[in-house]
Image 1 (cartoon, protein in one colour):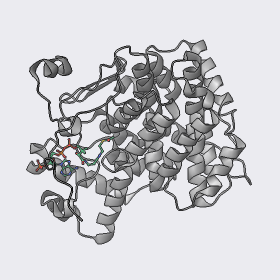
Image 2 (image 1 turned 45 degrees about the vertical axis):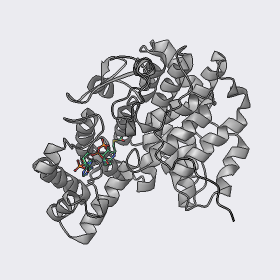
Image 3 (image 1 turned 180 degrees about the vertical axis):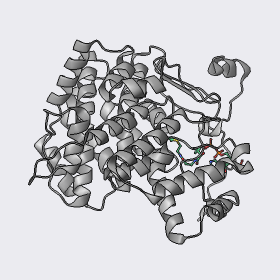
Image 4 (image 1 turned 60 degrees about the vertical axis):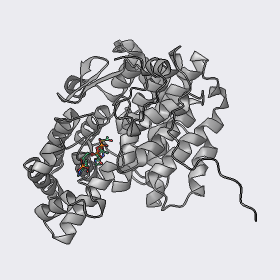
Length: 399
Ligand code: ACO
């Protein structure tokens, strides 16, 4: 590859690349993807190994610091995060001011943005100690905020974090525990959720990570940069697809139209309808995460003793689409979001929480990218060009 900006400057051209289909915005050492061969690696480690052998916090360390942690580094990191889970009491009350019908993704981004008001000490992005502290605070508090967004939508009391529990178990308790009874973590559920979070931890320059970098390139603090990333993730063409898949499956089920007819409507692009959870800007053979998620779906549903007709519908939809020239020609395969919703539903999360779970998963990747950008001496403020297509100079009318 060549440095396009130097080339363009020399030749006097501006490249128009809508959607940045072929423009690299940065160099990065964090995540490698080969979309044609379905390869995904975190810092050089295959996603299949990472998902099978690691934990959410170990992968977070790997992504943020570049190497696997030693046992003592990981223990200290874990301990540090447990110590920072509490939210300021005023921030806890912040949730009272929002309507209980609020989408949890809006609640999440607002509360993460609000964190910057509580930690004004974090605003010096050049101070490594403050960046370190903000990293810990974000990892510790995002799951708590997410669980509060969930509890708020149910009209239930917010619980305090239980720091005797692991990261994932604490999150499950905050979501599904209540004040009246002891909550016992289901290990199957905990393991499955940890695996899904790991699979989402980074995915190079997707829309939300690029947003985090773009906002961060202005030297805005890490809380507001990540709040912007959460908003980018919200859309149904990005992280919001996991919620949209379940909505699509439920609609197909309720309408009784059948998979074949629905697929025909997609192919006719009727009302712009798309097969949600299918297609990817980078993967043009298969999404390796989707394969692992599909395995998890089978395991989790079997372990929990849940049989969900929506999973059968998803399998049928995949089979029909993969045998259809429309999808084959366009290289459209299931992406990571296709089966996650079915698993989250079996775990007891409402569809509106699905993208929030994605956000918790992606947080380490956003932090790693923000920090890499912040440490890179070549970073410049992100400022794309445009090709102006409006009117030439016009005389202001006499009125
Ligand atoms: N269903 C039906 N047709 C599709 C789909 C789909 N899911 N995705 C793409 N296509 C078609 C387009 O209509 C287009 O067809 P055409 O050539 O006849 O016009 C062709 O495939 C290329 O599509 P683009 O939109 O140009 O592909 P792009 O790379 O820009 O989009 C995207 C990628 C946004 C993921 C797209 O595939 C999509 O909308 N998928 C559904 C939403 C989804 O699942 N998003 C999650 C992505 S993964 C993630 O963010 C974690």
